[in-house]
Amino acid sequence: MLYRYGKDEKGRPVKKAVVYTKDEHCIPLYKIDPDALRIVQRLKDNGFTAYIVGGAVRDLLVGRAPKDFDIVTDATPSKIKRIFRNSRIIGRRFRLVHVIFGLKIFEVSTFRSNADGSVGNDFGTIDEDVLRRDFTINALYYDPLQEHVIDYVGGVRDIKKGLLRPVISIDTIFVEDPVRMLRAIKYSSTTGCQMSWALRHKIRNSAHLLGPVSPSRLTEEMHKIINSGHSFEIVSECLKTDLYMALQPAATAMMYADRNFETNYFQHLKELDELVSKDKDVRLGKKLVYLLKDFILTLTDWQKEILTESSVGELYVKTWTECRNFVLPMNPQRTELEFAIRTCLREIGVSIRIPKKNVITAKDENESKPEAAAVSPKKKSRKRKHHKPLDNKSTLREIKNTATDAESIKR
Ligand code: ATP
Ligand code: MG
Image 1 (cartoon, rainbow, N blue to C red):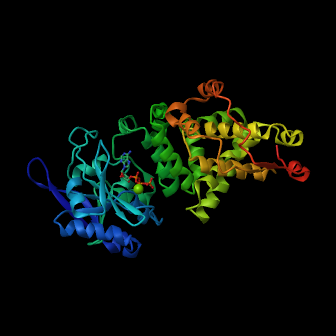
Image 2 (tube, rainbow, N blue to C red):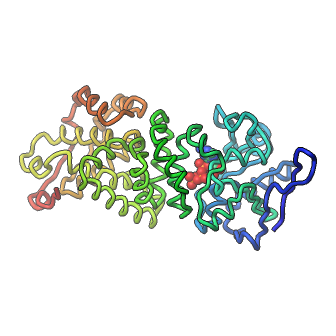
């Protein structure tokens, strides 16, 4: 074990960070994306320091395959941009650079300063940057050229102990950024690192802070949850801590109201996790099936609807609208939502073919903006009354049903 030293106020040397060598951290170099390695190398060749940071280091240490490789450096975004032609600067508040290699995008950011507490957006040093990161297990820096893990906050020890510990003070961590509550629950499930009682208690008491968070950030987290292969555990924990009300308000309200709905919802999440663990790149529509399955059954007595052959076009559009509202603030692409609805309906014996020129227009899509519709279930049902009647006739080319199909409907 090596140490990095700094100086205290009196100029005396003090240990700042522990440096783990490759025999100690055991991260095999072949598990590092060669393009991430190339980016670090190029930055170093240009006289900058650079590390792989955050989720990738954490995942490699807990034995999971990293989803992506984030890089942090002391080069400013404009300098990074100059070094990599295949890059673009993004972000208004805190600028960072996307370096593009084919289909892969690497996020390269500049060390952040901790000067104004932890909320400023100035550039800083690695010593400051580490104090801006949410949890110790996310605050590790890996130098792939020397094969060193640099640990300022005891993150390696916490991984060994299976502990999820905040870097930022527990009094401000969630006030500063409420999404960190979702992150805490996610990492606790995906890495097996446990939260302390105090942290969990803090989350439960701070759930209301998620209220004003933008639909796009909530959607991003929801996508991470359904892609994690651990959605069952994460959603259970989010429900217990009252966070799921912000992520999926309609589903939460239905689970509170109906025990059976909750049981089925969680059963479907288990099935979703199985699917994702077999094929993580499966299309969104397939994953949405698991969120919508049971909800679609509650919409109508499908068996009766089919047998009486009532206006199937209207039924489909209503189903589409209800499903769109049900998954808010997620606002999936129309094609993905349609795919999910058709799959769910097919499973209960209703087969639908959508005409090429679909009746759900761009205007209707705009009306489904999460900002406009991200409301509590109560408000949402008030809003539904104002939905304009849609032109249903051309929605369906065909709806097929057979007696046997209809009989297979589960209620
Ligand atoms: P995953 O992508 O699997 O959710 P990750 O740790 O890579 O995990 P990112 O959102 O990609 O998460 O963020 C990269 C790193 O940036 C994190 O590991 C963490 O150090 C830091 N970070 C991200 N979001 C926050 C936040 N809200 N507060 C503090 N630090 C954060
Ligand atoms: Mg990441």
